[in-house]
Amino acid sequence: MNGTARVLHAFPGGIHPDEHKTESCERPIVGAPLYERYVVPLRQHFGNPARPVVKVGDTVLRGQRIGAADGHISAAVHAPTSGQVTAIGPRPVAHPSGLPDLCMEISADGRDASIAITPIDWRDLAPGELAAKLAEMGLVGLGGAIFPSHVKLEPAAGGIHTLILNGAECEPWITCDDRLMRERANEMLRGAAIMRHALGARHLLLGIEDNKPQAVAAVAEAASALGLPMEVVMVPTRYPSGGGKQLIQLLTGLEVPSGKLSTDIGIQVFNVATAYSLYRAVELGEPLLTRIVTVTGQVRAPGNFEIRLGTPIEQLIRLAGGALPDSRGWLVGGPMMGFELSDTVAPVSKGVNCLIATSDRLFPPRPAALPCIRCGQCALACPVGLQPFEMYVHARAKNFDKARRYQLFDCIECGCCSHVCPSHIPLVDYYRYAKSEIHAQERSKRASDEARQRHDFQAFRLEREKQEKAARLHKAAAGRPPATADDPEAARKQAILDAAIERAKAAKQGVNPRNVEHLTPAQQQQVAEIEARRQHAATEQDT
Image (cartoon, rainbow, N blue to C red; front, side, top):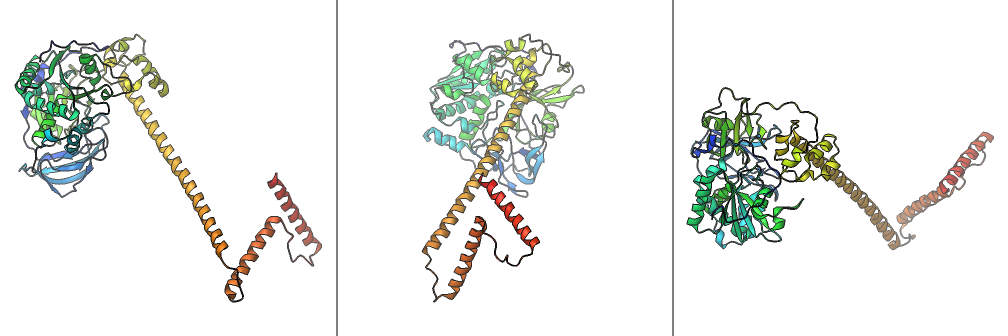
C-alpha cells in the first residue's frame, strides 16, 4: 500500500502550470452554518433535469426528495434543510452559459428537521440491486463530470476487473479532494469498498499526485486499519493526470480506444469525493446534501468549506472572509477548465468544487489572439495525442465534418493547447463551439427524420383506412339482397344509386349529353366546342 509497488506509464503531452495549492490546503475543512434561504437547481447533473415532486407552499424536511430523476440518465435532488417551498422557477445558476435555470427556493424554518433515514445493508445485495437502491440518492460524480453514479455502478457487460479512485486533483488552485483524503480517508475508503462490491472488481487502485504526501500517508494508514486490499499509487504531478483516461494510462498502461468508455476495457473510475458521498448514502442513509468546496484566490481566508447544496455562493464567499479589494471576478472550477461566474447569487450545486477570486495580478487579461503559426506546440501538449491546430482551422471555418475527422470528440477540453499557444488563441472555445454545432445539427436531423417518419406513417394510415373502408363497402354491397316490390323504399334508393353510377360512367366515357334537341346553330356550335375540348383533354390524359 505504498507508491512504489506499481510501474507507472506515461501519457502523451501534459503541462505543469503553477500549482497554487498551499493557499487553501493548510486549513481544516470548515462546516457552514444554516442559512435562511436555499435555492436548489433541478439540473445538477449530466442528463435530464430532475422533475419537481413538490409544489409551492409545501413543507419539506432535510433529505426529502424534491426532484425525481427523469429517466435513466438523471439524478434526484433533495431538500438541504427543513422549511417551506416558496418558489419554483428560473434563477441564476453556476453555468458557463450564464443563463438561468429551473430552481426550487426553500425558506428554512431553523429546525433542520430530517426525514427518517435508513442505512442500506449492501453486503447482502447483488450488485445490480445496490445500484437500483442508489438511483434515488442523488449521487453524481463530484470530480467535475457530475455523471449519475448509479449508472456507473451498474454491472458492465464485459465485467469490471479494476476500480480506480481518482485522487490526483491535478488542476491548479483546487484542494478540496486533498483535504478530504487527509481528514476523512476512512469514510472515503469504506465508500470505495462498497463500490468495489457493486462492480465486482478484483483490483482497487488509488492514484494521488506526488504533491500530496500527507493525503498519501493518511489514505495508506486508513487502508491498513480497514484491512482493505488496495494500492495507493503516487503519480507524477503533471496536468491533466486527473483526467480519467490519463489516470488509467498512468496506472495500468491501458488506453481507452477512441469513441469507447473505460468499461469497454474492464475499468471504472470514481472521484474520491464521490466515494465519500456514497459511504454517507449507504452507511448513513443520507442522500447527497453537501459537498466540500475550495474558496481561494483573492479572498481574505482561503480554505475548504463543507456547504449545503443550494447555498447562495455569496454566502460561501463570506465564509472565506470576503473578496480582497483588487479582486475583479470569480471562476467556478480551476483556471484550466473552469468558467467565469456571472452572478454570486447563484447557488452551490453538485458540480461546484472550487471558487477562485481573480485579479489582474493572478490572472492577467489574455492578450489578443494572433494568427496560428502552425508551430505544433498544441499538439505536443495534447494529452490525447490529437492535432489541435487542425481542429481549430476546420472549426473556425465551420467545416465541422473535417474537424470531426480529426477526432474532435476525443478532446477532453483540458486547456493544455490554449495554455501553450504562443498566438494566445482560445483553442478550446473553438472546439466547444464546433461540438455544440454538431450536436445541434444532429438534433435537427433527428427532428427532421422523426417528422418524416410521422408523415409517412400518417400517409400509410390514411391509405390503409381508405382501403379498409372500400373493402367494407364492397362486402356490404355483395351481401345486400336485391330490392323487391316488397320493399319500395329500398327499391327507390337503389334506383337513385344506379342512376348516379350510370351518370358517372357516362361522364367518364364521354357520352353525348341528352336534351340537345331543338338547339339554335349558336348553341350547337358551343356544344361542339365543348366536346372537342373534352376529347382533347381525354387524349392528353391517355398519352
